[in-house]
Length: 374
Image 1 (cartoon, rainbow, N blue to C red):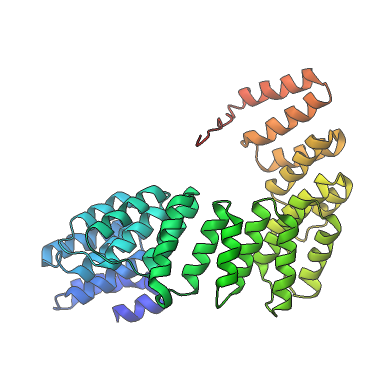
Image 2 (cartoon, helix red, strand yellow):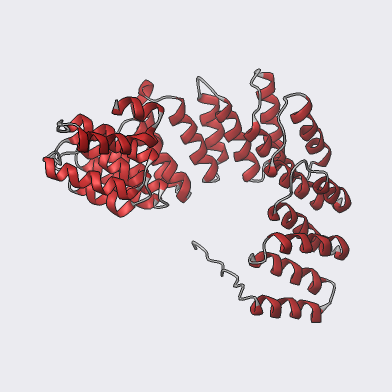
């Protein structure tokens, strides 16, 4: 029953667990605890997980590796990194799943460097990584833009040979793209025996993100020639590429084709890309009209995109209207005040710019200072 609830309705696991403890004269075993912790990782709260952890200690199943793995999973998926690592550290025995799960937990909790350190410790402990470990390692390298570590992981991928799957190759492709090595990314892409829509979308975004907008559009055309249909995310990457390259006509055509040819309704990200594309080209009236014609209420981000273009082109009137919309939706975002101040300063309206800065101070809105890895 626990396994069934875990698969179909994990939110009922805790209620069923309480029923078992209060009504039935049945003692849980290691399989029970593994199912309960896996269910609590997806459908409950950390408080319930802590209570179940206490029951594990009480019944003496702390040394079971399957229970330990499920316990670590429960903590990590409830975003309790400290609890997850403590449970992992207390495990008397760990397998490759234990190490990989903990490394993935570090990555998902925003600690990619710790994930790489843990994988190195795993290798030193004599545990051979599998394809899931490798995918986690590559994603950590991508998060850190660590090309050197990424190439080491690539070497291990070569050693694994046919043991890896498409997910690992997609992670490798993403790593090279985010590290700015598009020559290596393209080499990996061309060597892939199988490519999914994720593979094509990743290479398109990689080209766009690294300033190779024309190559991104060419990759899209090759994807269409290969009879692979684009999805929602593909069009975000494609429109982003058009925005980066200044390809206004192409962007308008893709935006139209998304609806007419593929039946994909544009979302906020698509509209942001289109507003950015038209705004950079100086077609600010069209950009504003596009926002006003959106089938749902524009968010502050869409108006901020238009506001940024108005700052670049020194357009006061449309910028004023965009600023009003942004402030009506979010008065606490410091970037809005900075954009308005910059627009006024560019038009030599120094008094207005100073008033905006004073208003920012009065509203206790603070701009987060920039930082650099260098």
